[in-house]
Amino acid sequence: MGRVAAVFDVDQTLIQGATERLFFRYLVRQGLLPKPRALSYLGGLALNPKERFRDKTYLKGLPVAETLELARRCYQEEIAPRLSAAGVACLREHQAQGHDIVLLTGSLAFLTLPLKEELGADWLIATEMAHNGSSFAGEITGLHPRGENKLKLLLELARAQNLDLSRSFAYGDHPQDLHLFRRIGYPVAVNPSWRLKRQARRHQWPIRSF
Image (cartoon, rainbow, N blue to C red):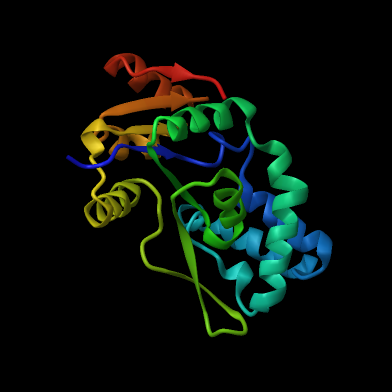
């Protein structure tokens, strides 16, 4: 019999806000991302909104070491204060029961790594960025953890780490989590959008506020 996991989305579930959006603004304020370039990037997203979650070209050419340092500072100053006390309490309850903790998010891996460390989570599945050692390429490496890809990546982890998803829990706020919810034993809608709330009521999934 496999181990039980508790899988937590990050943005709007454990964190009240969008972590990468906070980081983008932080990079601009700190001067690493010049305002003209930031505005050009945002303009590109407006013209091609379907790519807004995968497009990381704003990071292209940024120095890895300095960006990682700013990511940790951004976490401490902007993200950690938005950490939900109720969400942390729920996560701690699962840890007390011996459940493996998985953070599963479309946000940047290097930005959410401090959250994994602070919470003592066992696994982090997030967006990995390509780089050449000194600067970022502005491209994603591997699958982008969003929608169906969240489930694919979790299934890979479950096979590798002997996690029993039929006995496991998942917490999320968005319809993009539905692929996962349909394969997990105990899904929980947290701060759900109206579309997810409708599905939760239809399937009689618990609805919680963090």
